[in-house]
Length: 138
Image (tube, rainbow, N blue to C red; front, side, top):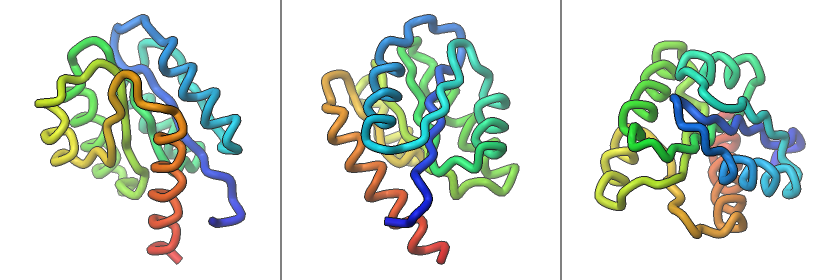
């Protein structure tokens, strides 16, 4: 793994006010040695992408419970591409129907973690994916 710690933005887009899961994931990633920036509630896709670029993030983790996952994932991925920052990995979780996951992956999400997924599984996926991304970049 690269010497630089993995940097992850954890974001809650839209009007959904439930952030317990996002905070649990953010804490687990920190405990695993990653640098985590939690953006707080009610963020816009624009503010999430700007934060990720300014913070030189490796990844953005999106937590969605509102049912607007396709819109927010699509908009965040589109904005990253428009700003030549599509190397930032996008992943997410929350209450997302299994039938919607293939579409999110098609759009460019790297992984979707449903309710009950262990934080260990998320951490291992992020570490592996960021390591692969950094290897390609070097």
